[in-house]
Each structure stands twice: as structure tokens, then as C-alpha cells.
Length: 449
Image 1 (cartoon, rainbow, N blue to C red):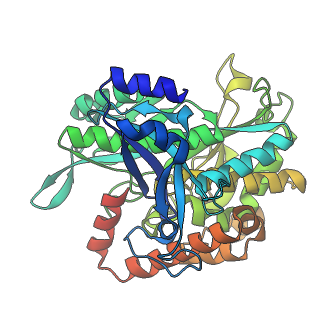
Image 2 (image 1 turned 90 degrees about the horizontal axis):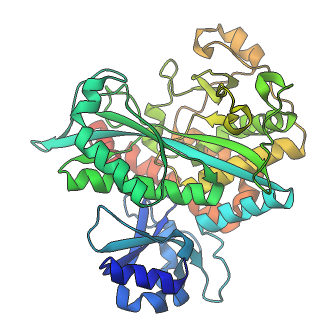
Image 3 (image 1 turned 90 degrees about the vertical axis):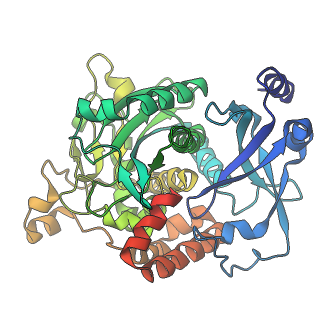
């Protein structure tokens, strides 16, 4: 939309405030809002933001990162193409914002800028990454100071659908009003757990969509007097919440799926297998960006359908990368890969960008994917897993951070300032949350995501 069209929409829909949203290094969605009377100027000039915010962790503890202290400012500059009226917030709209330096150049520590750089690297090869996220979340009510699931239903149970029907319907309507196409919905395994997937879009737009989906899920629940948590492990005794990334690589015109080859193994092209090989090579460090909270590692356990070993395979839901079976008559369009070890505590711009960096490394070095596994790796003997290269994931955020610190491909892709600030934030979260009692740690994550 043009600025003029945005202002016309605001007038006709009685919008008073417009939020400029971004996601920080702790995976927290933050933003500032402008009154509609100043919106025209703010679209051009942005809103001021201290450079310190990218050094703030999810407990609002500022980390000592050089160049990110009390002195210095950047701008939150909104992308007009992302303008949307928020159906769950009366008289309010939103736009996704870039971090921009005062000289007008992209801020090096801006996560959306990072994903744009990675998308540009693909574009140089005539490629576009298309992504979609399957979000799982837990719907709860507050009783006596505790968060309690809205139901105790079974996996895919219509009882669970009925228990959350009103808020689910409102969520689907709200997403549709923002131009976000819902693909599937169902009640999931955990008590009060929901799952919803949306249509794929090019990587930057897909990350924008993920921010809006997260905001919508929580906003609609709040208007219904409920709490929605996308935390990876909302309760110790319940199923975890993933945010699986489905992705495929297309030519620059979006006409040919570069992952699809009818003659290839599982209908995959050599490019797809090289991409898989790159992703599997970098998984230990990649997890610090895709499963980046202390809470994430309570979810990534063997025999939990969340994946816990480095491997890939056809319709293997315990693999890092699942090759979903295609749909009849839609083989090219539906050929994609699913990256399992990711959740909504991640910053989607960083997760998608890191996925591109890892996959491109596989393509550029022409890496060979290991033999696929058609069994749950947890059922194999240790020597069988070792022979298959199905190594156990890092079991804590601290471990995955250490792998990221040694992964030069991912660090170079992130760039110095973004990498330093990100690592500082996530290291501090490991230390802070580890010092908490278990109940406090779970509750803190429940409320953040």
C-alpha cells in the first residue's frame, strides 16, 4: 500500500494508533506506536529507538554489548507493504519495521535486515525460499494465580475443537481479515493445545506473517478472557509447542519448484538434498537460533515427536528434516521440507535467515546428504545411530550457543554486531533462567511467548 492508501484506510476504519513491530534477539515481539495524525511523517522518518534494545534479553536485562548502551539511536522504519488493521485491537493497526541507522543505511543488528541479506544471496542465484510455519500453542485460563489448560481432550479430538471453538473461530477470522490464509487447524496432543498452519510466502513475508500470527493468537485469546502461550514447553507434564518450518526453493519467477524432481529420491532434486545436507551439517549451532530459549530443550527430547537426533527421512516425524509426502496431482507445488526443531521463542527473521545460510552452504559446497532414516532414531542402538550420523542434539541452550560460537558459516552470515549481541542476549538468558526455581522458569517462558 502507498502511504496515501494507508492513511485513507485509517480514516475509513477509525484507526487511531499504528504499531511499528519488530522481533528482538530474545524472540520477544516489541514495538512502538504512533498516532494516526503523525503517521504520514513517521512512515518517512521512522520512530526513534535506542541502540540498547538489541542487547535486551527476555527478562529486560540489558547486556554489556559494545555500541549498544545508553548513547546512540536508530529508527524503526515501517514497511508500508505490511500494513494491516488489527481485528483484535480496537482502532489499531500495525506495520512490520526495519531497524535503520541515522544515515539511512540498514542497521547491522537488525534481524529483518539480516533475512533480507540472506534472501538477496538466494536471489543472486535466481532462487527464492518459500516458507510457512505450523504454530502450536496452549490455550489456558487463570485460576488461583495458575494457568490451567482449557480442556483435557485427546489428540485431534473434536472435544478439544468444541472447547476452543469460539476463540478458534475468532482467530481464523482475524487472520483472514489481515490477508493471512489459514491452511489447517486442529486440536493437538496436549491439554488445551491447538495447531494452525498458514500458506507459504517468500521468506521475508513469511517471517512478517509469523509475527502477525503470534500477535493474533495471543490478542484474540486475551479478548476472550483466556491466555494463549506459544512457549516451547508450557507445562512440564504436557506436550511441547513447536513452530515447524515448511520450506521449498523456487526459481526467481516462482514458477518452478527447485526442490522437485520426479526422478529423484522421494521426488527431491539434487539441490534439495544438498540443502538438506547443509542444514544437517549446521544443526548444532542452528538450534541456538531456531530453538533458542532455555525452555526449548525441555521439548526436544527423544520419542516426543519433536526430533532429538540429527537426521532426515520421508515422513519421519522424529527427524530433524522431514520429507512430507506430496499431494496427488499437486506434486510440484507440494514438494517441500519440514524443519522440526524450531519453536516460537525464536526470532523468525533469524531462524529463516540461518536456514538459508545453512542450506546455501550445502548447495555451494555440493554436500551429500547422509542416508535417510525411515525409523525413529531413538529405537536404534548407539552404534547404529553413530553409523547413520544421527547424533544427539545439544541438550541445553548453553550447549547450542557453544556450537553457534564455533560455526563460522552462521556467524559470518549474521555479521559481527548481530552475532555478538545475539550471543550476549542468549547467554544471559541461560544464566538467568538457570538460576530460577523450575516453576518460576516455566511460568516466565509461558508468559513471554
